[in-house]
Image 1: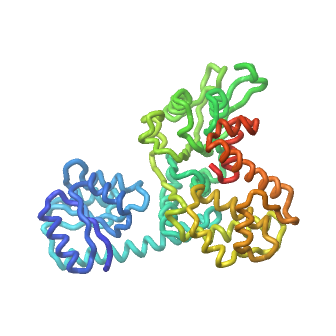
Image 2: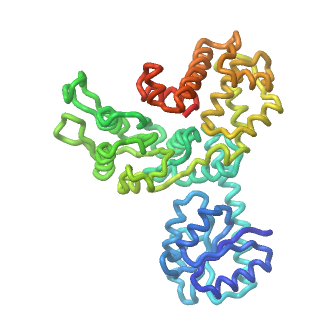
Length: 442
């Protein structure tokens, strides 16, 4: 097979004719009747090498589809199909990102030459882009999978565009690392980056953290606080778990994004701020009735989805080796390696806590191991919360291991009820959530 193509045209006869010609040339061909159907097809199967798109279609035409694809993660290159004499539309399509165009009715030999040339070029560009993106993200992220390579390509494409970006993905999948990679490759790389975890914050605390307050603005405001929008002026603000914000705080956040100004609590005048906002969430905000639709679209100029670890098992071993080396360095130990049997066991795990859970598990394996090679015996110990930490482990490693085991025990006893677990441990729910996240148990 020479490649996978998507033919998008509202005329069934044209789609059929193209399908016959292209399949005879050993291409695999998918079809869509308009731009909306094309987007649905790409959602279901993003591995299309090239799309042939008619310029004039109902619901969503070729030019509009190009606009949608220009900010879409892993979108295929597009050849526009036009009627003869429609050079103006072809030029406009090229301006919007099409890589080539072809006039209908088509000559079969010429069509195949155009398609073959562009499939080869597309694959070469894709490989170069993947390698460049992997290199640029190498300081921040460890991956070998195509799924994360597509994330890297998207980061490279949009990092320099000074627009809000919504990073979605399951808890622990690496959303914050993607955010830091975006900042590192942006025009604001040398400016401040501030992060706020919105989970568990009361309205008052979230408002104070984001927008600031004057001294005496409310009970307990013993000093003036500028707020993160002011502190991040000129730089970037990452709102982690933005879906946890209350409707009242969402409204205030929307106003800042719309007006570019912020007014601290207790102050009459507003001040202008120039902040790029990145937001991260594990929720489907588009379907969340508690999240403002207008704020969602403000934050989601571009969306980057970080796949869970189970969708990219190729990354488990390189990540585990990376975490083992880093943990050994922090504990001032010699080089550590993972036994092949242990690596196979790690790959077989479901990892509901994703990369964060893998990191904490490997950290525990290093802390428990008495040998340079970590084997299945250590894996068994790590899954026993009463297992002793290696004598050479640091105090922090010992405390972390005990704390993680205690949290697991109490949560199990409470049936996963975090509020009850927090009550039994005599800590606030926010503290419990923070500790669960720290140990990859959330």
